[in-house]
Amino acid sequence: MAQKPLGEECFDYLVKIQTDKFKIVTVVSNMTKNVWWKTNHIYQMSLKHGINFINNETKNEELILENILRLGINTIISVQHSWILSKKILESVNGNAFNLHNAKLPDYKGNNIFSHVILNNENTHTSTIHKMDNEVDMGDIVLEQSIKIHPEETSESLYLRANIIAIELFKKFMDKLSRQDKFKLTKITSKGNFYPKNSLDKLREIKNISNINDVKTKSRAFFFSSFEPAFFKIDNKKYYILPENFYKKNKL
Image (cartoon, rainbow, N blue to C red; front, side):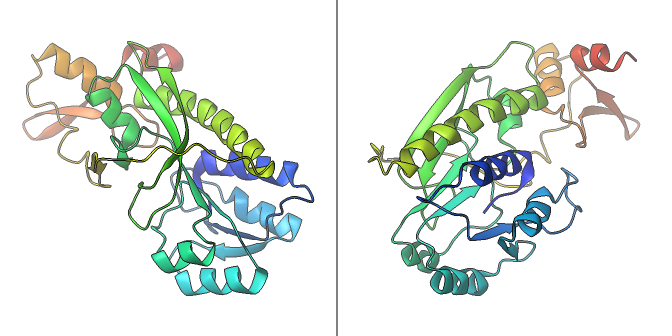
């Protein structure tokens, strides 16, 4: 169950390393390109390799469960899948369901994580693989890996660097899983913080343009291609703030 650039790269890796020990028999992903990353690569690859495909544009648990039972699926791997899995689905694979969440748990559950990490002035970013629970981004931690956040980091640059370590982490996880090694699990003992999809809506505006720290932080936290940058308003018109490295990159 995967989507977005990180999910696509992890899927390609799984296709490449299939052995007699494990095989991909069903894929759940986006069928159309009407998404912010503008690709349906997993769908196209599933057609090419003859892998059964389920469209994730709507939550279709009955079809997923039917495929699990019909095809004898015993493990679920999720990379940025868009829906929470029910207890019934998780029990159908005896709890062998794992999710790659590209953030620290339980501190950063949910959405828009790279912006929130910068807004919160974190020094490090952590990618996590955990066992899935029927509550969003919960379940015992299996593996995690961290990187330092650079002083001039934007949400986009952090996202790109974090994807690199997330893929490294995913490869370590698959190596241990394919060898059937036992994982040393770490229990999540607190609820942490959950960020909904609309969590940035009221934070993007810079209310006081003379607040230098706010300008610096928000210009970095809200710079991500295809999404609206930080802004301030004059006479109810928006004026966008971009970090210097964007200017240098695009040679404006």
